[in-house]
Structure formats: structure tokens, C-alpha cells
Image (tube, rainbow, N blue to C red):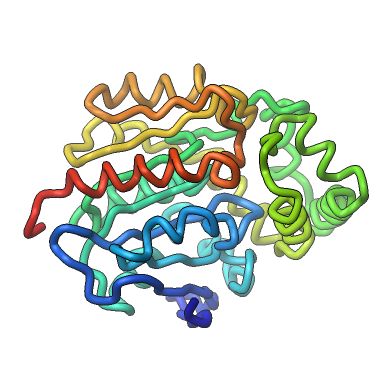
Length: 295
């Protein structure tokens, strides 16, 4: 696995990324660009990477303020639009002209915005357990999405930082994994070490960057992009996912884009990449196979 590289965006934000797999790529196996969701890092792709790297060039990156990336230098640098521009900049930096854009959770919105702004960079779109927009309006979390948005939108940064610190530290408590499984955010078959790694990362996220990203994602909507998409499209929905419930999110996305492939996971939670990796990995492979040769 290659060491992280650093790319500086237009506003000076330092973005950590890696390129693994087949460097040159082939016409039969397009490159894959993987975009994470909030509070996660590239560790989330660990179980699907072994399925993809033998045939594909894979570009992974951490959102600003997440993983090994630095915090957003400006508020503008922590918007959905800025993340889409970051994808294009990273692809240009490593010589990937176009790729299958794969997003997980709120990364789905970044993928769709990338297609809006840079359609030439997109061979196909894979939307895994995420919405097209207004992400907090379709959740079934214990705390209403409207309340989460109000807290992020109106709370002064020091207040948000303090609340985030208390909540994120609770994820490291002995009962953190149990709470995650009880709420349906973590699948019952997810390995304990994966759950621990995920929860240990949350307190390291930069609060101010997270706050701005969350507000931007809550206000962003790319449903129009999805409706007009003309390239191969995969939608993955988890029946047990409270963040992006299948009947409210996956079914709606598939209705907007009826030509898309819908992978419905009856036991899938929001972290299905950890315990349904084979099904998701194979679906992305099928999607990549639909990219026309010579694209």
C-alpha cells in the first residue's frame, strides 16, 4: 500500500490521498475514485480494495479535517462544491483523466456534484448508502435531522467544538461499539477491530471543518444531476440503515434514475462496506464493466 501524498487545494488546504492498484489501467478496467463520508477516513475501503486493486487504478482521499488531511483553511474549502473541485484536482495531479466515481454516505453528494461540474471526469457513478441532497431530511436517527442542522448552522464554532468533543469522546467509551450496533449505524457482522478503528477516528476530526461541511451537505441538492445522468449508475441501499433508509433514499434515487442498477441489502446498515464488502465490491465491478471500451 503506497504512502499518503499531499495535495494543496486552491485555498491552501492540505489533502491526503493515495493511489493504489494497476497504475496504467486498461480499457477493460477503468480507474476508480473513492470519496468518503463525514467522520470517516480511507480505512473504510479496506475490505473492497483487495477486490479492485488487481485490475483497477484506485485513487482514495481524505476529506478536509478528516484522516490525514489538514483542516479546511477557509469555509469555502469545506463545501460540497469545493470537494468536487478537489476530486478533479487530484485526478489531474496523478494523471487520471476519467474514472468511475464511487461515493459512500455523504460522499455520494460529492460524486454527483463532481459529475455536474466535471462530466468529462466521470465514466460511471456508484452511490453507496447516501442521498443526492438535503441529507438530514431523510434520516431516521435518534436526533431529528432538523435539530442537527440547527445545531450546526447556528451554534458558534466554540460551542459546536465543545459539543462535538463530548459526543466524540463517548464513542471511545467501552459501550461505544454496542451503542453503534444498537442504533443500526454499525452492522452486527462488522468486525470488532473495524468498529474500533472507525470510532477511534471520530474524535480526531476537525470540528470547525466538520461543522461547515455538515451545513453545506444539508443545504446541497444534486437530484437534478441524478435525473439527467446518462452514464452507468449504481445505487446501493441498506434496509437497516438509519442514516440513509432504503425506502426513503435508495428507492427514491432509483425512481429518479430508473435505468440505474439498485443493489438492495436487506441486512445492510450504514457501515455495510465493512460487512457486505463482497456484494458491494462485485456490484461496482459490474458497473465498471459497463463503461464503454476506449472511453
